[in-house]
Length: 78
Length: 261
Image (cartoon, rainbow over all chains, first blue to last red; front, side, top):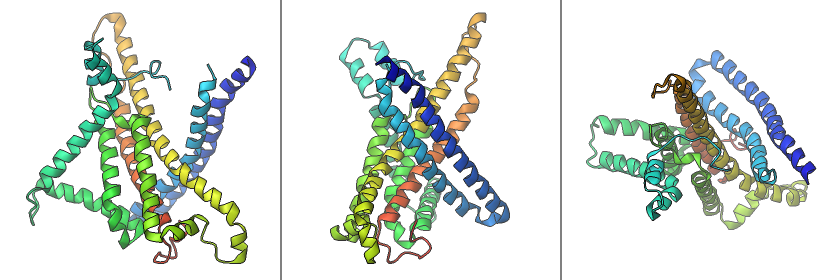
């Protein structure tokens, strides 16, 4: 089954890259909006920071799920 | 997942285990390396906590004032998310935060390691959060209310129709929460360790041709990055635990704004 193994070897890291790409766009948008909000209302920066970190953590979780799938399947590539 | 191929920074447990090579003590040290560092950090926290909380004064000294600042900051964070009823959960969230923060920072001291870079430490932390959240929810909602909550609080007939679809989704969502918690912490700390180890090696290799035993400290900027990452990851872990507790509590006394967090 060398063929399926080489497919896995190519697409496992690639899947993580694709998931990270989507997360990166989401994180960029979230942080940009938080920066805008902080610039508009500097006195609310603490609350904005907490909410931004919470959103960032939830966006990141999607990449982590992809990472878990990669870790689960990486044993099949030897 | 193979630990042999990944670069790592030396720590005193590994050094001791190598110098005792072949004896049963060496095997013991190798197997319990993360647990030893975990115990060291726990002992440090316990020592300072006990020392500061003995003879509390109305007018605090320096150490007591610092400790009060930390506790107040954590309390403000938890109460800011859950409202006044959040105070009951401050000890749990606060001990998670302090343990993870101090473990992360402790790993940056030379010859030390942080146990949060291993799944064997982060998985128990996430599992503790999982069971705590379910326990709190069952205690506050009652067993039937807990199931009703997992079914998505159906009210109208149309909502009851979708319960067979919603219920498995919510149950699965509960199980993915600890997985994302533990892999986030493990991934960030482990990646930081490998990054520092690679640049440390690079600095030593650079000086080898001219026979100088001291390396270039190329990893120095990454240590500052690691301080930042350790702080943020500890904060995110505590924040997410708070939010997980908050969304599993009954909604009645909630602010309407926060009801669907």
